[in-house]
Amino acid sequence: MDTRMMLKKNGRSDIQSSFLANVKSRLPEHVSFPDELAELLKISRDSAYRRIREETIMSLDEVRILCDRYNVSVDSLMGREAGHVSFELSAQTGPGIQFKGWMESMLKHLQRLAACPGSEMTWHSKDLPIFHYFQFPRLAAFKLYWWMKLSSGEDFGKQPFDEKLIGRDLIALGEKIWDTYSRISSTEIISRELINTTLRQIEYTADGGYLTRDQAAALCQDCTDLVRRLQRQTQQGYKGVEDSPEQGGRSNVYLNELLIGDNTLLFQAGQKLTTYITHNNFNIISTGNESFCAQTAQFMKFLIQKSVLISRVAEKERVKFFNRIYKQIEDCDFQLI
Image (cartoon, rainbow, N blue to C red; front, top):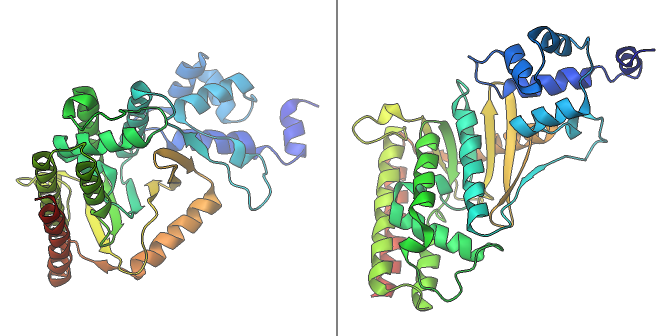
């Protein structure tokens, strides 16, 4: 009995088709799937079609090539028992260059999503999603300084904050991340904790002598400018620039006063869902497991039902909320004088 017939007999003939469907869902619409397979696997176009039709069973080496290229896991296709979910780990473990790799991975995921027409993302966050900070170079440098100090691979020791410690390459990479994110339609579920973590970081760094009072005041001003820009974007309902907001992605912002977010991110590209969860502050675990993603989507829907939409509508609630955030920043700035 040949391999294909044996797979059918054992009820496993859908593994290859499901795997290839997963790969295909990650391709931009203008890319020919058979041509892409042929190029990556170094086979003829006819051979690629035979694999798509399951007339030829793919080798493990071929599966590995596609997994590496499109960050696809085959674990969820292998009949795992209920209650088990496979995650992929994007870990930051080494010094600066690894941290740069972490940001490059973030950009890659966003670019892949942005390339899919109609794609969108939903974020349930405790803090302001990190993409927003990259609009302000000094504030972005401070956040990177903190993240790198807290990471296991980078240690600035007793060095005080200096934008030059971060380097222009990482700042430029952050700007690309924001530019890509700003073009993706998104729903963000936020709370009054929106900027508190950053304010506490500024206070702590200044109190420890790693930040001058002038630097701290400047960072607080950056926070004010960031929140002011976020308020304009929320009012417009788009993440674009001020003179042409509709060039940016649609922005739906919901205010939730009941639950503090856990920084869970749900990507949707066509019918494909992927859930991203932060782990140990910086590392990201992700899964495309259908059941898990469906549960995540259902929970996001529940949160939205328990929240107030403040983008484009509910002006009174929107103004009240942002005035409260401005007051938090003013109180922090006052303590630094």
